Length: 203
Image (tube, rainbow, N blue to C red):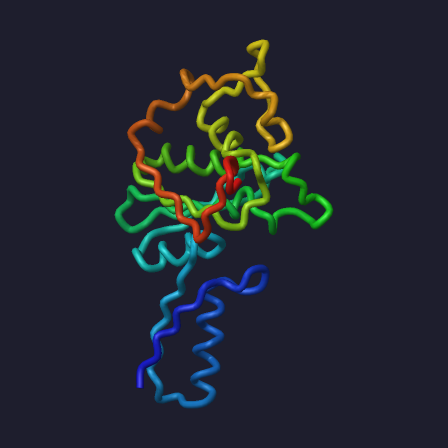
């Protein structure tokens, strides 16, 4: 008998790979002759990077970026086996699990660190991006991320304004003239398992 074990992560406790290993251990405890194949999966949240890196023979890149409250933390992303596709989890730099319950206020948090991960991958020659959007601690409409890419957000007087969720109402114009030109040549795919528009009738 062959059993394919393909779990997602268990948020806050086990990665998808750890969950798969635990399930395999349970099966072997019952019958050691059963063949098991581990295929950890992810839905765009935590575990997406590791799952795709493992499946493609890629590598993990570790670096320091800003967390949702702009404190330096050790983070990571993956480069897949083709050497040009980066897999980046928002949760790794701008995730809810990086904050204590008392710090979880989307008016004060930013996706700037997420943008820093993208810029590092751009610098390593990546041109294709899979962005896992699950597990976010932010509601800044991606302005923090864009700011890290060189986009400037200006208030009504033409001064740069902040890019946290609570500062979005101050933005009167957007200046992309200083955005890194390599961004225009890159391709971005958003990986998520929900439809959650910020504005409109269903916002």
